[in-house]
Amino acid sequence: MSTTRTDAATQAPTGTLISAAGITKAFGSQRAVDHVGLTLGRGIVGVLGPNGAGKTTLLRILATVLAPDRGTLSLLGLDPAHPGARTEVRRRLGYLPQSPRLYGGFTPLEMVDYVAILKEQTDAARRRHEAVAVLEAVGLTDVMHKRIRALSGGMQQRVALASALIGAPELLVLDEPATGLDPEQRIALRSVLAETSHRGCVVLSTHNTAEVAALCQQVLVMDRGRICWSGTPTELAGEAEGRVWESDVEEPTALRSWLTGPGTRRHVGTLPDGASPAVPTVDDGYLLVTRLTR
Amino acid sequence: MNTALVQAALPTARAIRWAPAVCLAGVLVAATVLARSAGRPADVVLAIAAAGLAATVVSGLHDPAAGLLSAVPVSLMQRRGLRLALLGLPVLAVWFLLDSLTTARLSGPGPLLAVMACGVAVAVWAPQRRAVVLGASTPVVLFALHQFLPGGTVSDVLGWWLTEPWWVLAAATLLCIAGRRR
Image (cartoon, chains in turn cyan, red):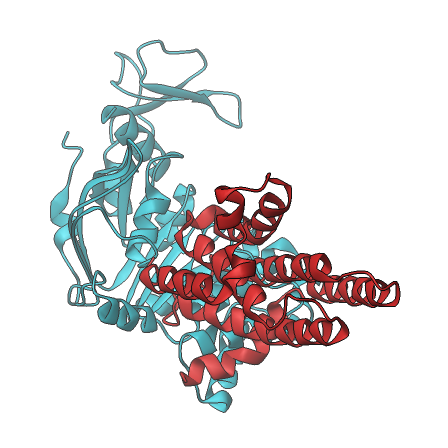
């Protein structure tokens, strides 16, 4: 089995929006991102990986928040290393950081309007109209005049998401956007992102493989700063084809085993004699890939 | 001036926490009035005022939503500049009020501007995560060290913001300009 598929990653559906080669970023002696190369076009790309894999650092680089130590990066055809080009990229970019904080004394409408001002949208009437539209898209119309500090965590997350969406960005970088959202809100988020992906590239990091399966056209699996696998969600599930099975007992030969809801154990690894393979999921593929690349 | 920055002025002013500056200003005015009525020299009160007000202004650089705003076209330095202007102007007004209430040798806005610029310079050059804390501490540390260190060269240098404020202001401003891309 090949654990690195670059063919899918290098196919940009309609023009290249992100192109990176040899991107490296270290904090002290720790390499958070290590020689990452990718080429992405229009669509939704999910970045999966264990904690500390370098997902957030990669996303911060793609959002122009961090500059890489080494490597070349092109965003929307521009080189963000140059201040002028970086500003132009930021005009066309939306960014949602992990656990964003907001101004508690603002209303959602004021918060989104403020971000729009800082995105250099100076036509007040148009800005306000768009702020209302993005708040409607994330389902916050009813509370857009309430103070943010009075809103629930999920609502605050959606205010931050609306702030990232303002200005119809061609490149949307979202670090764990579904954190704090209930299932209904997650489904609404999928619709919003699917719509955004028609006009550009959405890169999101998540721990939720179900989200990736439902939403993303492409998956990047990161581990220890590197992209160790890339392809479609179906291909990721396919990596576990014939290598996942269930039983009532522990399997010492399995690469990974875990207890499922009904009480049986699910395993990934080399199928033992006599065991019948189970239908693989993206979870299985992800666990197998991250284990095999270690 | 950048149109976006002009439009951002009002919401930025709303985003700033004004309570610390207002409380400090009230305490300083009361202390200055007391010193004046008691016929006490107000030099130390004004030095405390300069350090305290400068620390308050630099602490106003703290932006809770900085993460969310980290990829907007209006840069961090521009946003910090806006916050400094919004906080600095009323603080300067407080300083002139205090100055008018005393007959201290320490006169004019020089010391306040100098120690404020030192704090901003530290905030510009310090690691981003601790920038505001270190910058806001700088005026207080400079005041305390100058007050409590025994007289000598080190104490003199640490007191330049009081004795040679315009030179200190110029040097700190140059440091801020040099670090504007950070």
